[in-house]
Structure formats: C-alpha cells, structure tokens
Image (cartoon, rainbow, N blue to C red; front, side, top):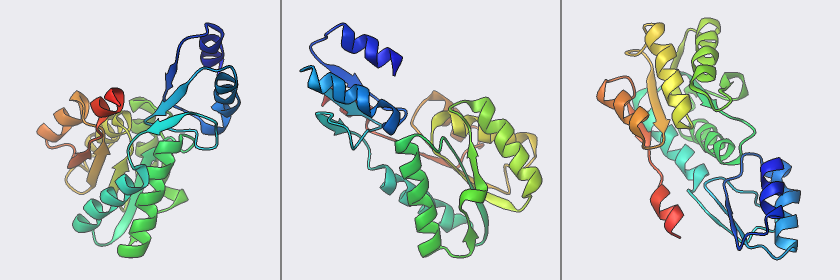
Length: 200
C-alpha cells in the first residue's frame, strides 16, 4: 500500500500493478483512478476496485486443471495445497482445485485442513509441508499454486523420502520448476502467458 501511495504521488502517466491483497489495495487503487491516473492490474486482481482493466490467467480454471491432473494419478488419499490463502489469484486456484476434487474425485480428501500458507517463500513451503506430512502421513497429492511453493514442497518431499509416493503439480513456467521436472522431483507445472500479459 505504501509503495502504491508513493507511486500515485509521483503522478505517473499510468500504473501497472499485480495485486498481492485485493481488499488492502482497493482504496489506493481507487485513489489513483480518482486522481486521473489509469491503473491496470495484471496476474492478480482487485476486482471490486475501480481499476481500468485486468489482464491475467483464468485462475479458477487453472485449479480445475491441476485437480484433474492429480485425480488422474491418485484416485484416493489426501491432497494438500501449498499457497498464500490471502492472495486473490492463488485463492482462486486453490478453490478451483478443491471444488473439482470434490465434484470429480470424491475419493481424494482436501480442504482447509490441508492448506499450507507458504507466505510466498520456498522456505515456508518446505517447513509447512514437512509439518503437515508428519501430522498427515497419508497425503499422496500436492498442488503448489506458485513457483516458490513448488520449490519448497519438492524439498519437503525429497527430505521425507516421499517423491515417489506423492503426485505433485506446480504452477509457473520458470527455471526452478523446470529444473524440478527435469530432475524428476515435480510431475508437472501449469504455465501462464506472462509475456502476453505484459504486451497487452
């Protein structure tokens, strides 16, 4: 919020913003628009704000795709989600994943009890999933909703010796997730059209 307020104070010709917390940034986004500064959100949105437009992935559908990947590999067991629950785009991915498992793969248990807040760090993902695996050793599926989550979750699974037993899908097409796939430590990842977001 402080950084956006300072940016608005510079009176730029326009602002492009990825929104980490929709409600927290909404008043400042509205202030920018009210000051006559066009503001476009990308990747993560503040849908109730006055922002000019949003460019991004259909995040709920991305969660649906992740669930169908996991459901095709593990017909029963428990599924964990490594995410940042307060970040709108990641929350949408999580909801799409949970809803689809419930509707199409009822043998896989998921929900709030198996959500790990990685706080946008790989360290948070690793420590959070490690603790969850100790409490729930029958987790056999993991959806990591961002690159840092995938890197940390893979570390936790590697340290627990569970890479072979747990189906894991990540998110983001970057060096970290691709290296994990090459090394056999991540089954798949979902990619966004990030270059296209910047272009449009």
